[in-house]
Image 1 (cartoon, helix red, strand yellow):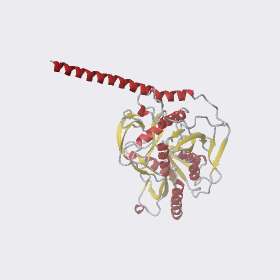
Image 2: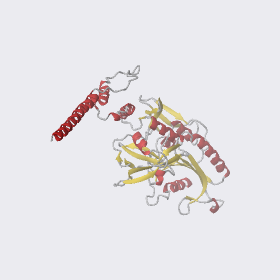
Image 3: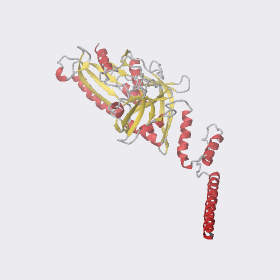
Image 4: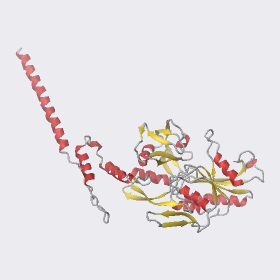
Length: 426
């Protein structure tokens, strides 16, 4: 009995010790969190010289309260929080094309202009606060999976993207070659979204491609094999310009010189078709360079207007092109944006081309890209652009002279190209 009482006493001592240890341990943890001081150093808190000073107290108050009070200290990534604060400041402008690019997104953007990156191969944009597909790149995993211009992206890997910035969406969708991403897509003019699984790949974007081929309009205006054409068959030249990137001008000149030699040697070339469909744009200087191939040197290509009323700068055709006399048809659709709209508008306003296809995207602003150091960058809308006749396409696009809607039942049938050939031969 005595031995039993001794064991009970020992057990009670151990239990009490555990409870006391638990009590003090919990309170010690609470005390530690309460007295937690964030381990960060603000390198520069002063506003730049010449900038109107604002009271940044609320920002730093929230920052410090998060640092001291937020329960999960592992989430307090100061660099990520700073990037989020900068992104929010830029988004407050309400301009989807003015954006802050943290290092990863800035690198992705530069890779895209360089013509190679890893992802699904689709140019994204924002319209009515919704992330949409401006255009899938030709031959890309996105195009092969059935992604189309105008599609809305509802979710990435099952996670709703409501409230996401364009940068957030791009970062989540891009990834290493061979990995999969699942997109919930709402196709244009449909009511039910679909989940599409896409395997990422290395996307190599060739800016320019083209040919000179005989055509036959006995039934539909289509290209035919040279072996099936007779000596008197009409021919057309064709250039597909998919983007305005780092290598565009060099690729353009190489192709143009080749096609020009073929056109001069042929007797029946009736004109040229410039295909700008699904071209999301790029550098303004490249747009002027391309337009100069068709518009006589010195004629207006595009004008810029900044925030000062009446302050307008006109950019003229800067060189002597080789296609300034040949008849031209320009193909556009809802994926034609920015620089491609500049070229299309310049050719039409200078009476050098007719536009065939669909209403273009309607991006009428110019962004300046700057590096901010440590890999980050920013794109700032610095002006709006107008066609030579003063049209601002922003939000409304360019309306084609000949409207042609693609055949939804047979995507392989290029009704727009067929119509372009038909109009060219009239």
